[in-house]
Amino acid sequence: MPMHNELYPYRPITERPPIRWPGGARVAFYLGLNVEHYLVDRPSTSIFGGTAGLAPDPLNYGWRDYGPRVGFWRLLESLDRHNVRASVLLNSEVCTKYPQIIEAGLARDWAWLAHGRDNSTLQAGMTLEEERTYLADVVATIRAATDKPVNGWLGPALTETFETPSLLAELGLSYTLDWTNDDQPYELAVPGMYSVPYSIELNDVTMFVTKSYTGREFLDAVRDQLDQLHADSAESGRVMALCIHPFLVNQPFRHKYLDEALQYIANHDGVWMTTSDDILDAYRAQSSVNNTTTTAKADR
Image (cartoon, rainbow, N blue to C red; front, side):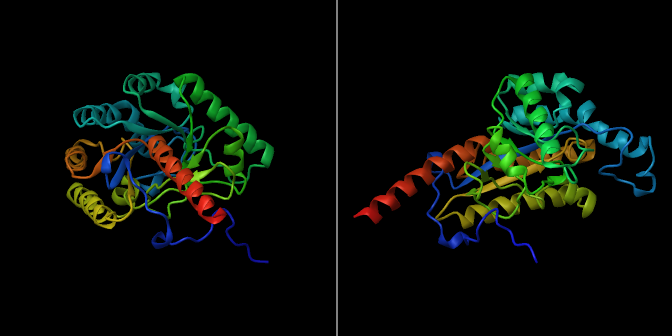
């Protein structure tokens, strides 16, 4: 028998209660900062397929390794300049492999989301108990290293099993970014779990690796995304996620375009510069009020 999606119902954006963001903002913006570790003997995201299957593969591994060694620190200057708090999509291996990055984020009160153990390991094929153990270790490692809550999840390569949302709820998480199908948060069928918007299109992997965007085209896309979401949000708030990897957008010849993009967003009218954690908190607070109002009307 064919399988249908039961994780969330179809509910068009035109048939939902309006969302109001703090301070009268129309668009809630967060920067999804992928901070990742890759295994040296497994293939992963590559710039040149000719060597991607080799172990080791200095060309592609070194390209990815530029992120924690150099790109991240160039990015940090821009985030500080524009007062952007990152929502860090964190491989738990980063906690021991690159502790200086954890220290930098803690000093800036960033939000920490679990992003698997490393970006070379996917959950596909894991049994229920294997995945439960794996996720528990990932989340516990990040919580111990940051001494902060871990509320959100992004799967490596945005991968899940059918059990992932329920297992995340068991661990006390409240949202996933994996289902990239909306401009607003929404509730999942798993009690206590939500989806928060993430973008596979406004994502430097897609733009620079898949579509070969120039830096200028990337900047234009960011501006166009924000302008359209701002126009759409006249009656109900929207979410804009800018999803980046320091080994890509923070290459020297691209970095200035990200900096200009952040400047544009930070100075745009009606934008709430925030984190994915705070976006969900604001949405749930309103959702609770809307549900209470609906129940009260029904009881009259």
